[in-house]
Length: 356
Image (cartoon, rainbow, N blue to C red; front, side, top):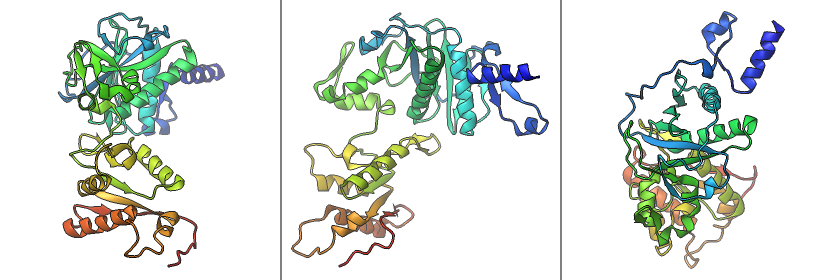
């Protein structure tokens, strides 16, 4: 009746239940939903997860000073953790809803554990009652997508019903961690990223002092991809420096960071000069080498980019954008379209003409 509908609406609104959209059930006029708090206990680990899957931890506290404490802490250290009853259930509900929205595979759920996918990004999240945190094992090579989304969903839960709670992400201090292995120490990821300007001076993690290269190597999966890469890039953005063109490239790069490719769903690697070029290295040599290591080039062909090429003569200075486009054509001619692509992105005023 009406009271039942109101009760269900309230349960859905506050994450106490999640509608499951099943086409076959919908045709029968039935609404199917899951109540996370009524799920059965199941402590079995994800036995079919890859041995090299990566783990991160969602830690909660009501003590605002906790986020300002040490960069690295012992995993078993209390450090003021607090995870209210019902928090995991609410987060599980939102994760299932997002999985449905992204057409992930059917979830396998229990009271303290869930095997879920966001699109093709499979992960297992588990409530660890003893250490008062949530462990997430990610079965793909681009775990940052899952991490960012779960952190966002946890923030929604906090705003809705636990406003004094804080959530932050911690990752194991060592790069490799087995599926069932317990970490010795955890690193506060946000604090590590905030210290990036001082990485060159070294970062102390326990008895270790890591330089910038070691930090990037050990925590690469969790950090923004920056600097020149020996392995190459999926796409090279060639554009004219300017407010509009630069903003277009920034938005494209930001969008691509949420994408994954390949069987292991690794992250998309882009060459954007703002995050790749390194101080002390020749600019022209760096971008030419990067282009030769790229799968393809996306030239930003805008009115401004073309207009500044007007009147170029043999005596003119080097136009780096034109040089990049010429090099892209040379690479395409050299290796062929099966190994290299050119995908121009054109924009500007319709009907605009560039006079020679």
